[in-house]
Structure formats: structure tokens, C-alpha cells
Length: 327
Figure 1 (tube, helix red, strand yellow):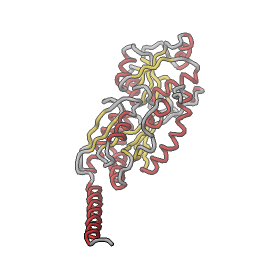
Figure 2: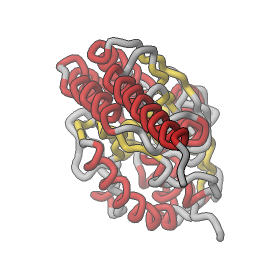
Figure 3: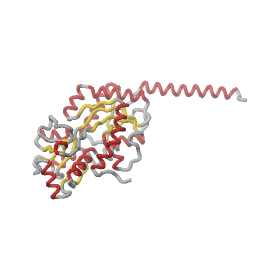
Figure 4: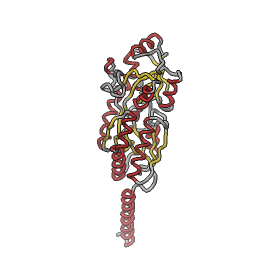
């Protein structure tokens, strides 16, 4: 037979649970009440860093709290989001920039995180275009010259990128594989270091975001040999696409925002609305034009669905680039 005290304890427990749930609901409703950390997997000064600093600045105005950018380059730009996923609480106060590398790196290196299940997909925000360029004084005037030189000098063509395992690295290796040549990849800590390397004559070419390369080409410091877009771009007049040269490499790369798995829906929705409004702003659209990036906005559900499909398709490109890790 239950004692009267057992009934009292049950009532007290129920009241405690209701109170706790009430506090959680209030906390979610009041979110955010302090600064938010936004981890970016690239070095300061590059296109991705500039992009997310502007998005954070604009979104913070709507959220009413500062968004602090922390740069964590490494592991093919996955160090920032993977560290967040493993170490941070899903309360919305630590989030991370997500690029295509997040859905590619597990095919290249063994990791202790799942690219889909370990994240909350918050918002798709934009996309990159990529190009291959050499120094303006390079004797390599076009892709034909580069391929001919590489065939005569296996491994002597050095290609700089913003890091091993990045989209730039993947595209360089995939192009080399399709052209039947051997290159030497040189990964740096960011785009600015890669550009400096080419201009200083330490490497022969670089693959990077168009927004990084165009200022070099417009100032006469670099010559762009090809782009990886589906069609020729207005801001790269006369530059052929890889596809037009016979290489089936069309690669727009969306980017967005992720958090640790299990984030409360109200918090996700607040972040999505704030960052989506930032991406819709005239100020951000001007930055997209400056960086030569594309508009690509997705809701949390749409972004996760895209990620699942992209993760499956990415394996074939990693395989073609001969970067697929062995079991």
C-alpha cells in the first residue's frame, strides 16, 4: 500500500518537471541572451571569412546580441564544425560555417563524426564559383600549355590552394586526373597565403574562389585559365569553362550554417530567420557581387535535404580526384 508521502513525492516531482520544462521554454523564447560564437573553418581575410563576418554582423542586429567570429582552419575546413559538433551544447550559442568540405572530408579521411547526423542544419546562405589561375608573367598562357608542360614534367606543376581537403584541392586533383597529368598540390592555411605563393613564384598555379582570384586578374597580377561554372561568367571575359574544354567538371559549392545536433526548433527558427534576412539584405547582395558569389538560400529542412543528397553524390567526385580513402 502506498504511503501518503509517496503521493506527495509524485506531486512534487511533477511540479519540478513542469517547472524545468517551463524554464526551458522561457529560455528558448528569450534566446539569445548573450553573445553567439560563429566558428569559421578558414583563415581570416579569405572569401569565406569575409562572407560570414558580414552575415554575422547583419544577423546580430536582428538577434540583438553580438556574433563573434572565431577562425579554426584545418582538416579541409571541417575542423570548425566538427569541433563544435563534438564539444558544444545544442543551445544555439555556438554555431559554425558549413562548406561542401563537410560532406566530402569523411570520404577522404577517417573521422569520428557523422556529416549528417551530428549536425543541425540551420540555413543555406550562398554559393561559390571556382577558377584556376597562374601569375600574369607565367609562360603558361592557357590550359593547353599547362597540360603540355605537366606531361613533359610530371609532378612539376605545383598548384596552391587554401588547404588540403578543400573544394579547391578536390578540383585541382580532379582536373589533373581527367587531363591525365600529375600535379603537386600545395595546401596553405588560407586563400591569401596561396595567392602570395603564386605571385612570389613559389607555386605555378592556384585554384580558389572566383571572388578571391578576380581582384588579382583585374589588377593584372594573374591570368585566369578556366572556371568550373556551367557557363562562362561575365566577370571573367574570355575565360573558358572546364566543361567547354572537354572536362566534365561543373562545381558550384553552396555554404551555410550548422549547429550541434539536437538544437531546439524555436532556436533554429530564430537563427534561420536572422541569417536569412541578412542574406536578403541589399548590403549582403552587394558583397555577393563583389565576391562573385551566388545567391543560394534554403530553409533548415531544405538545407538538410540538400546535404543528404550532396553527401551521396560527392563520393564519385572524390573518387575521380583519386582522393578516396581506403577502408
